[in-house]
Image 1 (tube, rainbow, N blue to C red):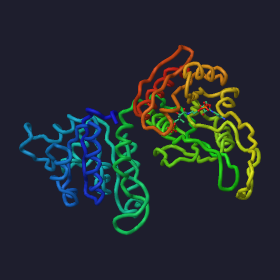
Image 2: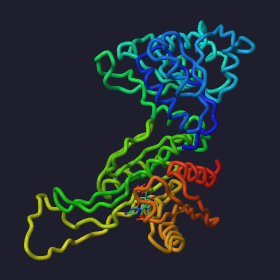
Image 3: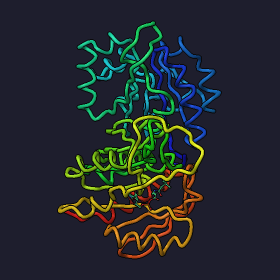
Image 4: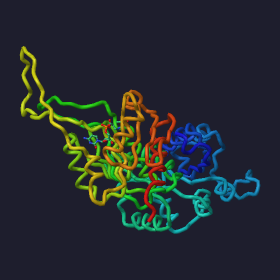
Length: 396
Ligand code: PMT
């Protein structure tokens, strides 16, 4: 969570019941080391008090365009010049309409107009208000003006209805804020990624799996998306929700993962195999639950296709990146794997530290040699890996 350390974030609240989520967002932002300044509209103050937001942000909350305590009496200029990003959450239908027209009759709308930094809006409203042609017209205008619209999501609404218009959760907005500070190193690139374990059925209720959680692969997918790539994530069974804004294909066995990758690889500029793919599968998966007997039983295994090897062997193959999890001789085994699979880059990690953990440590092997990425949260390593890939990609 170091991506926004020291960043100055101006958090604006307009009127909506989702204002309570802005309290949690403020807490997450300050925990991540950001400096948070809060500006609230009059309507927002009806849903949550400035006292709450002041206590959580550690800074006075601003509500008034005519605040005489601001030295030059121009709170909108003072506040908007001092921040790296403006985030409005919740952004009501009324507030979107106001911004689309360039109206500025209160502090928040005025500083949005006066700002020089990026503006992110997290809409929150009833589903009919969201679907109303006027709102959709305003959103089109705002996107055209270069303003980022975060969400909304679909689900239960405070009014009792169910549908589109729920504000994103605080965690999701935090991820979007972190993403906005990432350099767009893979802008315009299409990246295909595998993640998680595979499951090879023995019978209808049993199978061979492994302990990959999917954390590393999902972190790589998020880092690639944040770097501006269009990402397709082919995922084995995991408990994770895919990062927003990418295509996720769920598979179970290695053969399904192979088929899903092969169906999409022609369009990819980069392929990253993070999945822990089973090298073998039972020769015959029984169509019923095996009954317990008294003696030993033998399970015959047959090799699975090598997905990374097959992608790398294609004519016009994308830039291929493999992972190698080893319990010993990390350097020797990883470099041998890179040469055997004929890939330009392999990321090696120690299996005993990598599987399931939140942190990891990587050694990258490419034609230039060995590059160590010291122990860090998986998302930080994923961002460093993406930066390394961007440096190696052929320049057009
Ligand atoms: O999911 P986590 O809990 O976060 O753990 C992350 C991880 C340890 C799974 C990940 O960091 C990792 O190391 N992934 C590769 C695991 C592995 O053991 O790979 P391998 O040595 O079996 O295979 C080497 C490469 O070939 C990998 O890129 C793999 O995706 C690919 N492969 C392997 C077999 C196969 N049949 N097809 C493949 O494409």
